[in-house]
Length: 239
Ligand code: PGA
Image (cartoon, rainbow, N blue to C red; front, side, top):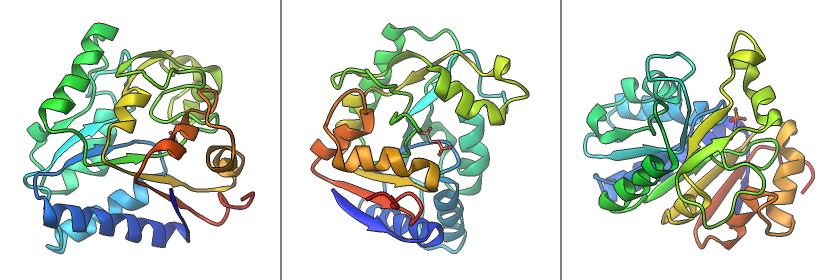
């Protein structure tokens, strides 16, 4: 685990450089993307670099971590919508090469097909991750087995509360999601992890310095051979 502590602006720039380097070396790289507020700086930087002609996503393939169950891609809180608006519509990627799990009619059986799609594409070269206040990666809530593949997840109350800010009320926050499993994430060849802000300081400490346990899903990253952890000074405050 390589830990980089910097400002949010520099983190966006440094992380973006990884994409530029990877896509130069492997234009058809398979990229694992994440949603939430954390990657927005990085996505802005990737869009800027793409517009400046410094990187092309024309042959890249992407797989997103997760999606809410019950929201289709036209819902403005769906992760398909988020990705189109914040990244895919701003870069030269082919929409048909972008994958976000389907939130409608999803079952565990169908969800596992997502892992097969990832494998068929050659596996994920670079997976981006944020972290929930309870240590979740993707929507893998505490207690998710490390051997899990893409599956349907019942969201915890703390995750629904944390995400309620994006909905008119907590009642509108979906109660379930479909998420890559921990094993799916760990199969990525390289991982970029980003955590920003003081609200993440405690969980970042547990993830980096604590016991490797399903109770802190992100702690599994201690076992991955190629993880870059980007944290701002506020999130690094307890290290
Ligand atoms: P955030 O969410 O980027 O909005 O903090 C991260 C997560 O819950 O994984």
